Amino acid sequence: MDCDASMSGRPRPSSPRRRTARQQDLLRRLVDLLAAEGFSQFTVDDLAERLRCSKTTLYALAPSKQELVLEAVREYFRASVPVVEARVERAGDPGERVTAYLLAVADYLRPLSREFLTDLLASRATADVYSTNTAAAAARIRTLIAEGIEAGSFRAVNAEFVAEVVAATMEAIQRGELFARMEMTDAEAYAELASLVVHALAVGRD
Image (cartoon, rainbow, N blue to C red; front, side, top):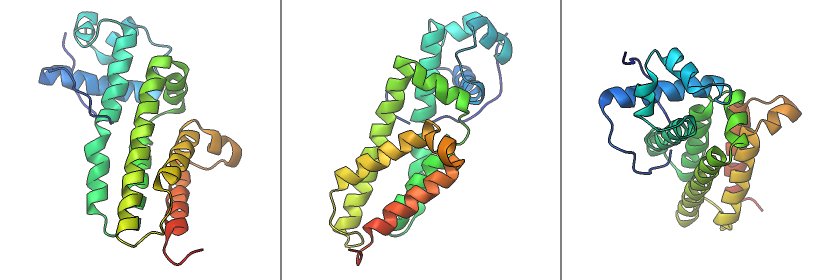
């Protein structure tokens, strides 16, 4: 029996294989399930039961549980790009664009459960996908800061260094370290990070 329903995913533009609309719908629902509950405890039989489809249908997406998980993680990150960039495009000055980017990332990552994040970091393959996307986020922040410097809105700083600091903080937020130490939610942490970066870069500050 085939599956039906939907969700949205998150970034990294790699070239996804061509799928039918039904397969794409199934992949999005798989993303939704894993994001909410993690993936270490699931077998392929469990996934087929929860998604109300056959194992054959799932294996048409990927040949093993590990590959299914990887496909879901890649899809989640890949789909974030247009969503996050749309928020940046609607922002005004460079400071607002940096803030919009960080808050959009926070909103996009909010559906990810602690179970999912724990499983994500425990697996080398999925952790590599996460690291690649964090590096992509750092590169985007670096570009936004460089644009602000060029426009005269930000002080002349080492944009690459600031981007690496932001990326390291983003990783700490997603690992739950700030929540554990300060009981600060991810959204609150991202808001504070955005405010810190924009105020630190503002022209006129020593």
